[in-house]
Length: 267
Image (cartoon, rainbow, N blue to C red; front, side, top):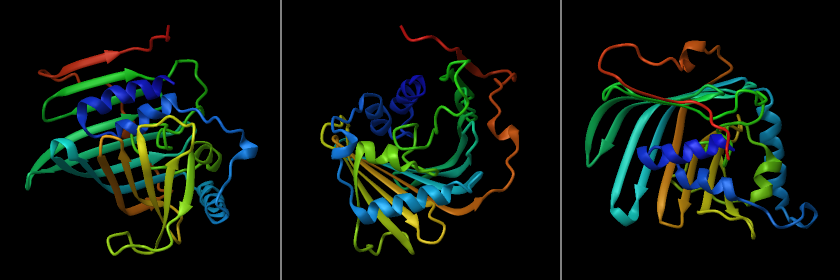
């Protein structure tokens, strides 16, 4: 899918996206027939409840913390911001990072990542850079993808979880006990790639609130020992979202570097 290819490129350059999760999804392929897949009964039942609960979801807003730990190069970064997600169809999201913590120093930012169901936009107001890529074909069905499902977009944060999609690629179990550092009043799912599924990720951990069954934290590990952690709080659901949040218009002010990449059919 072109959406995944474009996001992989952005992930490499900005350190914000969990690149391994996205890029691996393009080449993932399960070799086991569905009838042979064994599923932990407790995890299967929980995933059913999570998917059913999500059917009532229309919008999702939350404060966001994004940690990126690159062990091999000794680089740790923590970003703070907000996320707005519209279930759709078509599904859309907007993420704004306003603070960056690196080497114990906080820097103010105004960095946006927006997906409006057709275009993927990276906008940095401080540096006055704007990159806009058309990642979905103009004639594509509006319900073709959910940009935040595992392997479907830049964040491993499945707000509207599809059980069948997860179980096709991952073995899923419920961790029996929470650690002191885990979000309170949550259930912890551990996902590992199924045999025959090609993936750079070695593990995904998801924490869901026991009452709302919405994700509160997600953690990924890859083969290069890179760790990403996404933590959401102050969640608000089903409130109206203004269309301007997903504004894909290029800046007209003087001094901006603007790059627009239209759709190109894959050869």
